[in-house]
Length: 216
Image (tube, one colour):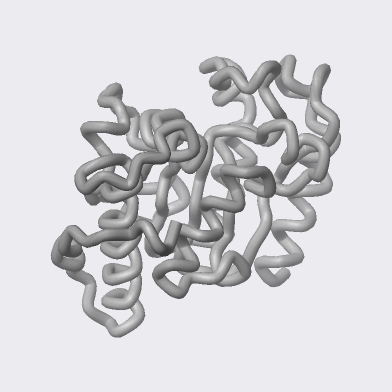
């Protein structure tokens, strides 16, 4: 079975999942979407209102900003895979509870074991803290590389960045602000990904600070 077919099989099972209380308030399960053969995967925390209605991840304002961020370094949405820690919307857009993340974790683990990305970008605190089993907040972890070892046997480079929703709430383009730092981070992600594709396994040097205001 190829990767796309395997993911589709798991998606069909996820769409009838009742493993936690989030199934009681969801409209649609938001399993994930993208290129199953990608080497770059983005992981957020959970669906919002627009995603709950459409069944697709990152399609609201935060998703549109994510598209702009990756597009600024010539990465297309169609070339990556996008998923969340939980597949159903938490009520009132609250953070998912630990038991909800635990109940939903097998779905994400299946996605990771099938796709086996070389680079993972976590969006915000929730996926970073759960995947890396750390307590530090995003202001301390963003922009740093971590080795991610998955139970299925593969290892990836993982970088946390600010969640696009946080950037929408903090739109300043001041140098050293959240958008400026995200611009630096996504450039380093792209540079490191390019090195992997060229057969060089070391991480890229940090990108220089520069104005990103015209891009996102």
